[in-house]
Amino acid sequence: MATAPVLTLGKHENTTTNVFTLAEVANHSDSTSCWMVIDNYVLDVTQFLSEHPGGKEIILEHAGLDATGPFKTKGHSLEATKLLGKYIIGQVVPEERIYIP
Image 1 (cartoon, rainbow, N blue to C red):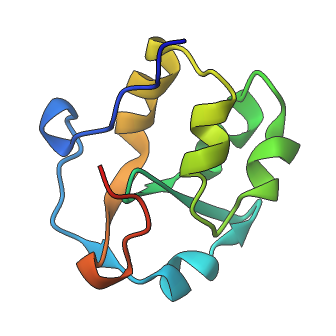
Image 2: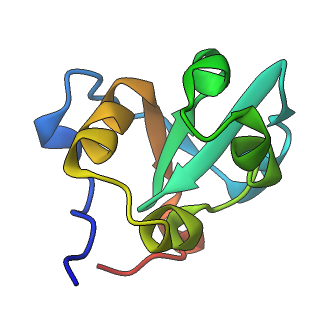
Image 3: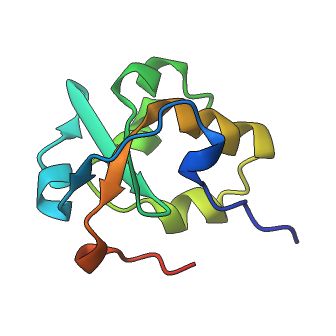
């Protein structure tokens, strides 16, 4: 079984030096402001909620949290992984990173 590729800022147009704590991410956990962490990148997926093929509810279950595990275990396509790049707004501060590549 293939694993989902690791996100890298260098491959995305939304490169940023913003860093956020997990507590800051947790403050954005509903449909009005929905952030999550995947591979230590902070994503603002608020605008994507209505577009998600599996429905917004599954995203909202992981809003404000590190969703790396759930994202990777659902078998998302390479296209889905690439799509995440446009939602990257920063990274988790180094001392709070959960995912270790």
